[in-house]
Image (cartoon, rainbow, N blue to C red):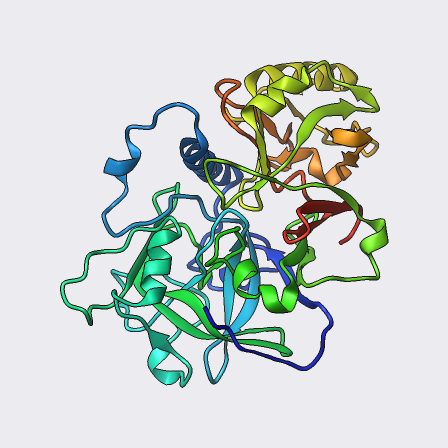
Length: 427
């Protein structure tokens, strides 16, 4: 793969991050587009988790081959935070969901009639108006690379048949189109030619106005790998604490903050190389380690995921964690949850001085990452908040660190260095 770069400087590139469903997002400026309710978000979140668990399960999965259409590739849910990047020549700015659990970057493309493409905020990208766009044939080296990178491509009827990519997500959303290359621009300074991406002509689902997706997974087709020569496989993000605030997504090293980052080893998940693994060993609440055998986490494995909302713990771990958390919150009355996924809920209405327990994730070598106070609860309504953790069905399902727990932390992915870093109060 040959990617050429045009760069004005060697500083890291930083993009503004906003929550897809929040008031800072441009996706809901159209009054006909309705943001999903918290309950609907959690339902979509469970679809994503089911998809991840099925890919990484140690148990046989019999349904995957029959439920994924022939044109589809990997199965994974879509994310929750968006950034703006430039595509094509001349450059077109597009709002893309960024997702550490996905590899292929794609956007909706012209021609696409209303029945084939969902409604998005910006005009659809028109490859015929870009002088740097090229699609591939199904016999091309790039199409072979696509097939080798977990995806499935349709057979070639002729040597000149187009290369088709397909991704079906855990919530039933999907994108299908032509595998292509194009110029992609990050901010105004970093330009990458020959970037491999999907030009989607048949896209449906819960992307809610975004133009497509920016894949930040670990395969050779991800944005991280395709820009490795410039950014050295280093990126970081800070997810905003509220829907009305902003965070950032940056690429490349920032020497100014590196000393404040707490690094842990980055592990690989054997059943899917796309995900970023964590060596999680335990959890503490207000400095007290919850009684969970470290083997519970090591046997299931753990990943960090920008697209999963609620953190999932092994059943044994969650039971012990919930019990300790409720004990620490005994001064507050439990309320009946409005959503079955979450079972530890409170009504803090009229209470302006709530003491939120300090939760820390424990890793090897004495490393601990303290969650921000914004990363403990998930608001179901104005009057009800719930502990933003849930239990898996059993201890064999993988642990997933969701994006609520990542709020206000700068999460640094030093993929080349084999480490993952955390910096507090970064946005």
